[in-house]
Amino acid sequence: MKRAIFLASLGNGTTSPNPMVGAVILDKDGNLISDGFHYKSGMPHAEAMAFKNLKKDARGGTIYINLEPCCHQGKTPPCVDKIISSGIKRVFVSIEDPDKRVSGKGIKLLKDAGIKVHLGLCEKESLELNKYFIHRNITDNAFGVLKWAMSIDGRVGLKNGKSKWITNKNSRLLVHSYRARFDAIVIGGNTLRKDDPLLTSRGIREPEPLRVVFTKTLDLPEKSNLWDCNLAKTLVVYDASTANKKYLKRIPECVEIKEIPSDNPKLISNLLAKKGCNNIFWECGPKLATSAIKAGCIQEIMTFIAPKILGGVSSMNPFADFEFSDMNEVINLYDPEISFIGDDIFVKSTI
Ligand code: AOF
Ligand code: ZN
Image (tube, rainbow, N blue to C red; front, side, top):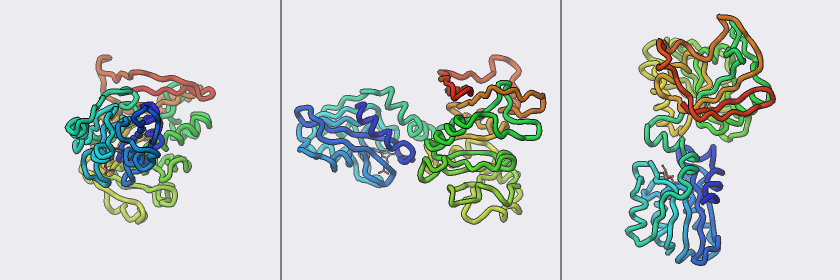
């Protein structure tokens, strides 16, 4: 199963909206005779790849899969049928598929066909590997990770908005490699106007994650790195209740535009989930970061802390006011993982 999980992880960054799945086949004597993984939506599933790669007859053998095999006709035929017709006698499955077209039905069909099914092997690792896919299927929203970089006194920029650079080069390179694991990166209009970021993984992920800018006003600049569609796709999402549509003409044709009825970040998360994004990297400023947390769009945080003091009551904070009046109301973070990137501190935790 560990091999199946490893193979599955090779699809990291390419399988969305699909899960990462690997499959390993042993013959009746326990010899490894094939394996495979799912690379991309629309391409064969892991089991289909493993059957395609078969070197020997699988009759009487065993298959290990880190996700319940599918039983529906989607873009590709049901994997359950392939397993049954192969003559395999035992199936090890890590976790059930949360996709409503499958969830439990794949396992039932295998059992009905007289195949022995063992559920739960390496469950924890498999839940972790596909947490984004599982979250989207259960909530209809994309799994959100909020990232910010700040000085040791908790500032994300000077009074005049300058913030290049608070963290060191290696921290910034790490951010590029994290971007490669996300289907979409979201910023707000203020970040676009102030930083004019590229928001790419610098070629680590092909195609690059979708770059999304949320704007309340649509008052975005005529020139912007995000308008260069050769670098990556861009989507502008605007709040129809406050935006001035006269600014739409500033946005080039290659950029996709969608309106939402309010500034609730849940609408962005939901819209992106519907577009097939399992996860979102929120690289936004204080206002959007605060409302994204309030709306329940953030499941993990990533914080880079640099050994610098910016000072000043009017320097920029990572968050706006949550209006807390009691310490019982503040946001608690869990399971912190702390590491050093040179002399920057990197903290990952769940929320
Ligand atoms: C498997 N093995 O390798 C994967 C599965 O549109 P389709 O046909 O690709 O189906 C997508 C759904 O199939 C996806 O939502 C999930 O339920 C399942 N993915 N199942 O048996 C695989 N990738
Ligand atoms: Zn399948």
